[in-house]
Length: 130
Image (cartoon, rainbow, N blue to C red):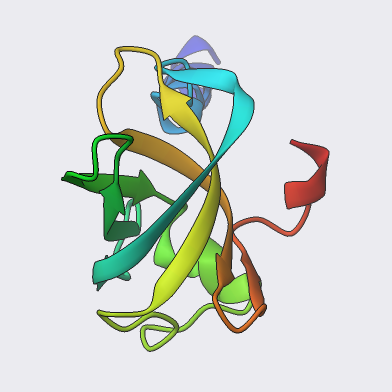
């Protein structure tokens, strides 16, 4: 009887351990909680997993061009919000609503992107709650 219970017990234990690993993710701890707005020109759009990226140029207060990256969700999640691999093209002006990185680098966690035409591209379905 004990021998019959041992394999299911090990399988159950293995599943419980693996669920914790699957749920674990780096999250957004490296980013501030307050939203900021940055206006720039898209230079590249990577519609990829695990995180899509929008690369864009931003003019700083001195008039110099800074290279920024806005990290979004996975292509799978962004597809559910209406994005496609053709949503952004280089040269398009856009406004990013995002949380800036705590270390002061030019990296952001994207929440919403608004094109110069006024079209809004949410990164998450409930982006207004952030």
